[in-house]
Image 1 (cartoon, rainbow, N blue to C red):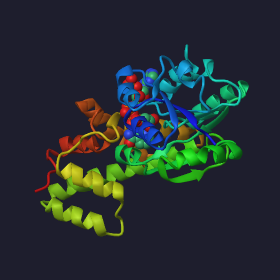
Image 2: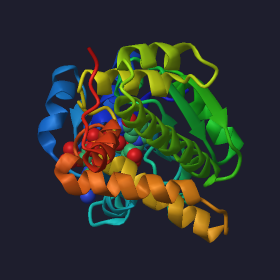
Image 3: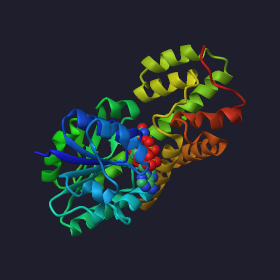
Length: 297
Ligand code: NAP
């Protein structure tokens, strides 16, 4: 049974997961590029490491959730990175949203050191991470997955095994393609409703119950009406994911015409200066084009 874990990357997602690992009683080591974010964990008994290599040197499982492929490149492959500290028999698990090709590169590099690797990205956002309600996918060696599953069950409400390395990363991009199109649909729909002079609170009452409802449409729609764009999933991360989906789909010659439209609007909203707002701020690009602001009563 795994007892010692390190968590690297204490951003929106990582901080929630690391807190839940502490609550579950694991002996935890933390590392974050901006070391200040480690302090709340130190106060709760976690060891704070100076470098990624130091963070992983004495644990059974090293987990990380980092912004993007570039961050994984630096934290895993860089000087004093995870690979320079991790040893045979340990397990590494990447929970970031990255290209499946990056997961495969990580797996190969870890295998050379006798280290097992799982790609294990998640669905859910800030609240689901904080409340251990994530939807988690994992891929890699089945026996290693079974060993790590009890840990993941402290972080999420579901854990799905996806087979060989890279498959969980691929599923994450499939899901985020759907998420991006839902956000685009919501934004286009609300702007059209506003232009048509509909009562937007009434519109959301229907969105909440109709056969096209989804929790994502409801929570984001209600927040847009309140003009609450506080960040659960940053707009710039969604734009990053759109780029990953585009690359991944191109590598498989799979068509993604609607994603390209959403990506253009995401980029416009980022260019307007809303990159650090929530992904629902995508609507601001359409609002500008339409000359309206979508607001509830
Ligand atoms: P976030 O709040 O921006 O946190 C990003 C983390 O990555 C921080 O710890 C940051 O360190 C670290 N980082 C970034 N660049 C780095 C670098 N070059 N070297 C070292 N560390 C670096 O992001 P998040 O929302 O937690 O997302 C983390 C991952 O989960 C992303 O891949 C995202 O796509 C994915 N994800 C997010 C959500 C969501 O709703 N937020 C949902 C599912 C999946 P600093 O603190 O020093 O900046």
